Image 1 (cartoon, one colour):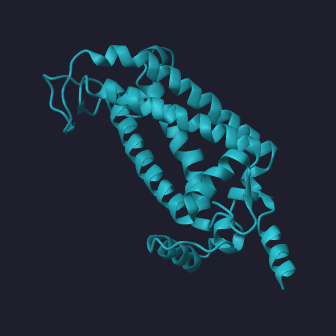
Image 2: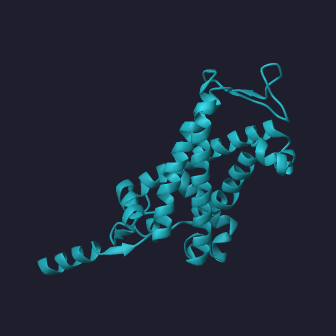
Image 3: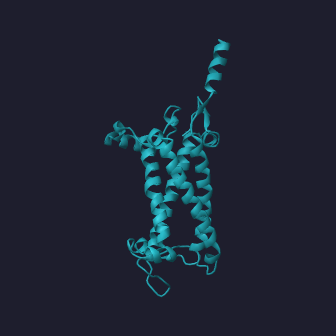
Length: 237
């Protein structure tokens, strides 16, 4: 009996592959770049915490939204080079992840839901289970459910391009060559407002993402994203 228990315990601790190197490396680079973008973006925003719609906006024009943060003139120019630096890191890393995921079939194997999962009642049931904030069992935590898969795909192919487009739409250098980047969004100030909306959506995603990681087992999940492996008895998301 003791030997059998030891054997079972040994089996449970055998590392099981979870995340490929491409996912792990790009994940942590993206995390660092997003943190840098948020810090530098806040520094830019406090220089003029008002949002407008259209081509122009200033203190002399009516604002669409007045953000409840301090109005500090000056830091914006200091933070812009850092913001652009982290933005290009995010873009290049994101493109590397997308291209690499097609080559390694990461999208097809890990993120593309099966046809049977697209049933409306099944997706609603999964969503309700997630809203209950219950800890998943080991089998459920070993893979992404249909709601998670669709959410991650929406971030990669929806939110990421929206960030890129609205960011380029704010650049007078880019719009002088490709004016449609701003005009299609309603103007430079519209691009800035939509860029802020993208940030809010991203923050909501990150908060839910972190909560789901906590429910699945925070340290097991983080370890899997660092090493690529988790014990067979405690797989991570």
